[in-house]
Length: 173
Figure 1 (cartoon, rainbow, N blue to C red):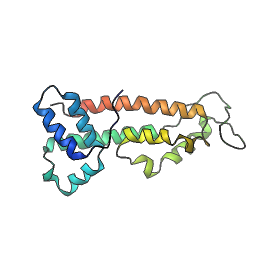
Figure 2 (cartoon, rainbow, N blue to C red):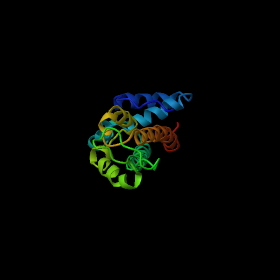
Figure 3 (cartoon, rainbow, N blue to C red):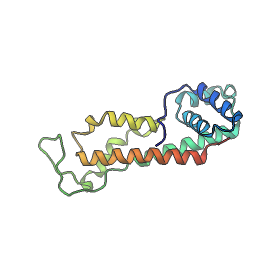
Figure 4 (tube, helix red, strand yellow):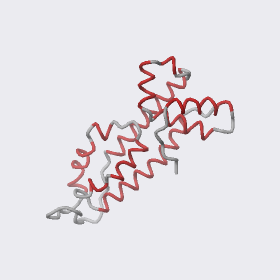
C-alpha cells in the first residue's frame, strides 16, 4: 500500500527531489516527493505566482501538471461512483423510519451528495480518503453499512492504483 501523502511543505519536497536526483538509489523517495508536489495547493499557487523560484524544469512542471490532472480525473470518477447493488431490500442503518437501500434508487442521491465542489475539487485525494473515513458517521444515517464498507474498500484500492499510475507518469530520475 502506498504511504499516505502528508502535508509536507512544497519546499521540502523540492529539496528531496534535488537530492534524490543526485543519489540514484532514491527513486521511491523521488516518486514520493513528486507526489507531494502534485497534491500541494501551496506549490501550485507558487507555480502561478513565482514560477522562477521553484527550480524545476519546464518538463518537470508539465509532467507534474499532467499527473495532477490524471489524479483529479481518477478521484472524480471514484467519488461519483455509488456503491454497487447488494442484497435487495437491505434496510439502511440510522434512518427512521428505515427505508430499503437499493442501488437503483440511490445512484442520483450518491452523486448529488458528492458532486459539490468541496468533494470534487480536492487537491489531495490520498488524504481526503482518510477525511471521508473519519467522517463516516455523517454518511451513516443515509447509507447502509454494506454500502459504506464497499466504498471504503474501493477508496483503499484506488489509493494503490493511483500510486502506481503516478509512478508511470512522474520522473524517476
